[in-house]
Figure 1: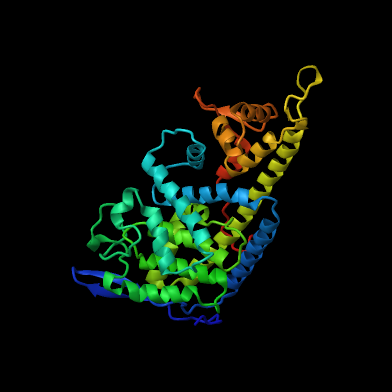
Figure 2: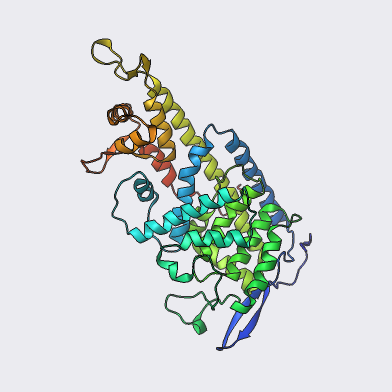
Length: 407
């Protein structure tokens, strides 16, 4: 059980076992561990709870959280995949989804696209299935299908030993070896059970569960991405957030060395407090970050809607953007499209809005005239436009602070 103590507790988080082949593997103890509720940890939890609560409250009042979910989710996919070595950018992913050809490696874009698909699937699946080993397998199958890690048996727990270390290292040279295959289910069963328990504060619980999942490393590939996928799904399942606007991959990617060192510190030395404070600091920082981005984007969209709804005078006082005697709603509807993806083409806009190509063209040209979008690229076949102000907000680096209290 978790002990409310400030005294010294045994720093044991698992045990090392000798395996055939002359290597040692780590088997983590079932959760929850014993750790001390120090004033610093209590303060970090209180601050993270406050900020994620503010994000939940403000996020629920945003006029279009369903529209903002799409680019925020894709930002998470890009940053989580970048931790694993992909180089695709958010702009490239959004361009591809808008129907634009980009030069980036198709493998990188496919991996990021799979992350998007897996996370969207998980959000919908929570309506019928709780967080569980079954859902974890389903997420992994969608994440790894058709990409470079497909050899890693998508949707199946590993049946052979894996390890972590420098590129090209052997099992004997590994910096960390997770549980051997025959001990895997003995670790995963208690982990799943812990997900369903309620005594532990939710933010502490998800921090512990994330560490444990990475320590177990149940797949041959994709463990980091699945582990990070589970964080927003947990927050939504527990009703901590109404929609998954909070993602920690930006924080983990910006503090990558700390992320790996602190995970390792739990296994090697039982440094639970340091890991928990780091995780809670990530929740606090990313809650502030997500709220700031969402509020700025929404303010911008609202001003664009007002401007786009004004009919533009045409030749000799005629209304150039009127249809059927009323101002055209197409420019306003195009603004809502930009909330989901700042890249847009005339063809895609016409298809999505169900209007004629020329009607979509006039709407986009109006947005270009009032400074909402500008042409990008040199393609002549289907002109590409971008609301760069939105893309700039989405692509801003995460704001990181080392102070868990935010002072």
